Length: 247
Image: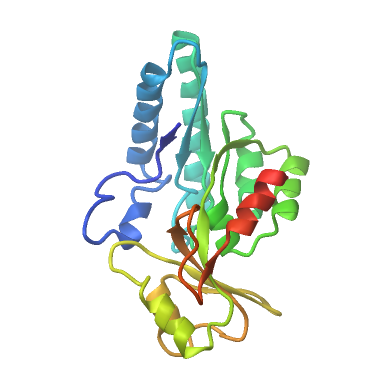
């Protein structure tokens, strides 16, 4: 498998929103992903016939309209056709997986169903990242059940855990969270309220003032180690990962 989400500059001092460029409305994304598929066919061992590439979930959510959706869908359809041809030439089957991420057009597994069924090609499915799924407070049984009923295949999974703050109202919890606010990547932060999911694009934004309600747990898109929990009073969403694996 290859991680085809980042395009360039992923190790830059500040990445933030740049990681979502180019998106699936731009020809560079199609060319790049096609090239990755060609490379992967040469990297796969002789006795391995199947490979996967995770990719941007269409685009960042802003300025994405029906025209953009049509352009992105056409690009992914073209990619699927190219992957068919690639298998005919190499004998290697490469599939691509949209990776839902908070803040993107496809933020949740449910968001992935409509565009993927519209494409309707088994070369294009979903990448279930358990950090992203947990950050959006998705229930694993519901999320994976919806995908199964819709006929959307899980092409790839990324086993990861997010940062969990049970009582974000407490000063000591906010101080612990502040240590994870850093300048390189976005750490989208979410909380589940009676009115639904609320969120900010970055952890620093959530900690500043009243951007998020703090009477319910927060989760931040910060990939934490699976083998070691964060220091108290923070925890991780490792239980969500285990529920996904069980399902």
